[in-house]
Length: 502
Image 1 (tube, rainbow, N blue to C red):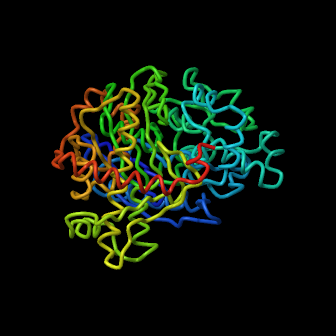
Image 2: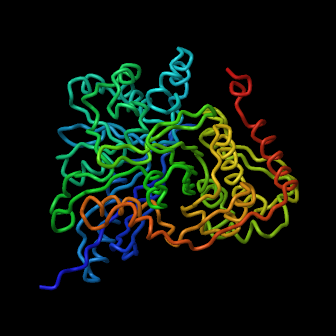
Image 3: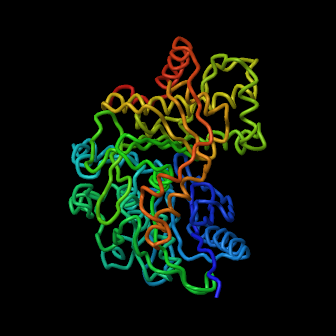
């Protein structure tokens, strides 16, 4: 009997779309499928998803990629999952039905609650235990909000009838017919409930947010046994053997395995992760401490800077303003002029993330004149992402960390104009890999390692290939002029409470 070539199905459930990519054991893409889904904005600063739509689109693209791959003669033998992090779902354990829409990581409805906890002097405790901040970004305050605003939810939670999960956990539950309620350490580290040092759910954090521990999933390694999919989903059960939050999966796909290695992913938001080794490093400059990966019970830590709006600004140009038909048009538009003519966009559509952490800030565009047109807005949107990345690198430098180069991935980095600007603004070489789908690839690597299809991290690191290196070529005076204009725009955008330090 001829053995079929083994494949790995990577499910990449993101903020604006669900994707599935099948890889072979040589990191080559065999098939892929993608579906966008609606964003729900009930009020200013609120962002939700329909969990059933997340599930239906995920299952649809997974089946499409699965069928295409197996039609080529191979056999999918393992599933890896990567997901939008922090987004929160609560469901009934008996019926499996969500009790409220998924509250998305971008959502800011719990800002006042987080500020109250901050006034109570809990910020340092939260950072020491979880590496995170008291901010609506993270899952804990979202769980508390649902428990407080859905009739009977707190009583049902205390009785053990409700389950919480980030999107990975929700998908695992659906794939396994609710036989498995589990997450991995990277997603757990984004909840504000997980103790980084002890690698367990933290009783003190659970008390602060008033969340019953019975709601929480088991925490596993990133390469681990997460159960099997129901036979009816793909025609046979398939082992789920790898899970990581999207940014950690991207770092794994970019082979950021040694302390000091760093990547930045440009999708809906922008997220910079720097590997800091086997000890957590607490930032003094508003960055996050998180788990980069956990294998065989041993965590590797990272510092992270989180930008809420990156590619979403380009999506707004398309869907909100209608001045472009697709994201690729921004490259030619941005290159039409030799400068930005003083136009700056601060895309604080859902507040500002690191290093500002201003939940009340809202987006603004400065420097508009009668001559301002679509090209200026496209350029300002792209420039804003590069400037925000500089802010993160500046914070890392203030923490004593100075990377010598950056690896990038995500949909935005197909834009040569943007990546060159990034190198210019950071004044660093920027490396773009041959495989831009590094988030899905990282999930595939983890699943493949656990399934015995892929060797260790040395083998994976040896497979990384450079597609193009972008060297900085902007002079220092021009760089500083642009950054000065950007920081002036940010200062004018910050909410009154942030400007006054309240």
